[in-house]
Length: 459
Image 1: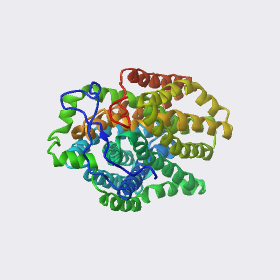
Image 2: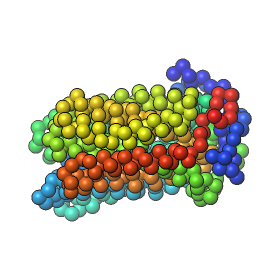
Image 3: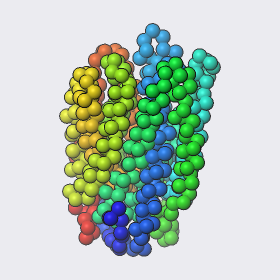
Image 4: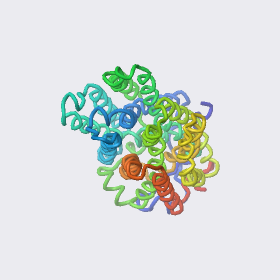
């Protein structure tokens, strides 16, 4: 971490009366310099906490694609029907995320980022652990899916408040001219959480099929109780973000941040939503739905999970590259690479899966995730954060990020599986992926550059 030494720099601070897109220049950054050791602690603790929380959230998507349809929902004569029902629960978690964004955005903007993050992890850890104790449909009838969906809602509420706070703990203490790189580090937690969840299921799937079906699938969920304790300990030791400390010291915190962000930054909220569509929707088509399609094609689950895991590990590196590149050339061009790439990859991605050859399948995952998705998710934290002023930044990011996730990531796997069940082919899903990518391309065309140059001011 040779770039963590921080000195007084110019900070991008948006006016209360002007939109982020019309604001030019930057206020002088009068924050006290933060030493390298403290900043490394912030980065490490934030990334670790994010990874532990997203591990919990992503467990459901992996289990829904692989086994929850059989265990918790009556599937009738078509095995895809039970999977669709399980993915509906996946979508329900996304439907709850905007509520979490509002709740924890309010707490984070008014009382501090740290307090909000400890609460989100507590809710997520408890809900995930309880999923591992649930009876199946064969044991409890309709109560099994009801309880599963209730716990999924709690997971969604916690996740809705997690992302914005996890990003801000790093980006609000980073020098503005390096914000793209440092903010991209926060995304390692999201990718790391997915790797941990996919890896956990990969390991338990090595058990005999009967053992996996009866009790093996519960292990990744029950382990979350240990993760919960570790995560809370880590987050309680974090210092508060520099920007929030400054806002609090000067009395510039908002009493009703959600209402203020809708009043002062409505356009920026819409922009953030548009930026999210391709990144979130496309990602879940290439991760959660891809596992469903792999089963449909007869590809072993181990091959698909290995592809997901390897590509996500590669993305943990490439997203840092994309974030650093955005500091040099701007946020928009880098984000555009990812959005356009997803449009171009919409058909080839599924063609490569249809070869049923592991090497081609893994190549599809690497291109789709590490390059296309990586360019967007590596740039997203800095771009979205720079759209909003400090006193409403948590709420603005949470609203834009989570409302869009309901319609993009939450519904995409279920809609894609329904299209597959009806057409028995991938081409409708490819068209769907192209549409998601085009929404973000159009949104980028109306989004002005937010990058701050090393000497202050915008690009």
